[in-house]
Length: 280
Ligand code: GUN
Image 1 (tube, protein in one colour):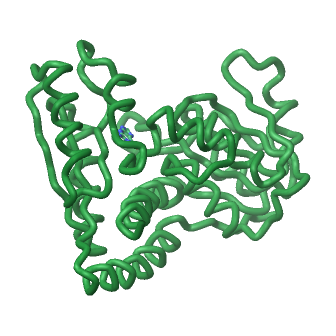
Image 2 (cartoon, rainbow, N blue to C red):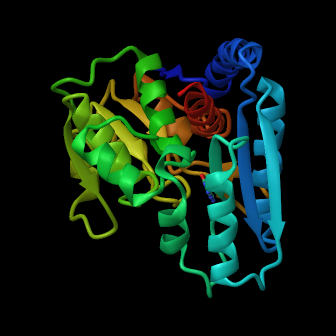
């Protein structure tokens, strides 16, 4: 079998086109959707992410407000900045780029973000809303994963879904979203015994571990839908996922590539969270 490629870049582009007209409609009503991006310090990867987010905003007409702060900023000063953004009516979405310097508690900062402006969906209030099934700002990567599964056209209800990885940002919320769609969900992690035996039961397999090429063809059920959240940089700068793409594509019925898979969808969902907040 040769898998259908679930092209996240194309799907994200289609979503952006749709968002553009929704932004236009809002502007006609006098609402200019705005996203505040806070970057502390000079982490090169974070700088690249922030630059890409700004470009995405420009593409769909969302105004991005950048707040660059030195790595010596105190926790209190950062909390004050977040409070100002909470109170600023021009701003509908707030994103504080992680990681933060060690002297600042990420949890405290994330808790401070107004849950209704929490474009990343990382505030524990939104995590709780997600768990209970209430309306919430969804974390962007898991939300993007769900859109890609929809693109594959498979029903989640009653299927075996295996998530490899248990982070707060991806693994846990992805598992909850699959459960909400009536999947039978298993979460695996570094201490799971016989990982391959578990992943082989998956009709839908989500890999979010951060280890290059660790999911190999022998760990995948023939016909499975495989979603690869990994972005691992190899020597020589090549970026690969957590899934051994060439091998697994021979076994799976559908697979996301890296790059052009989950990554562009994560970025599109950030815009969608901001747009929805502005529409509310
Ligand atoms: N750092 C790496 N990825 C992310 C993300 O999606 N959101 C934030 N806020 N920080 C990140």
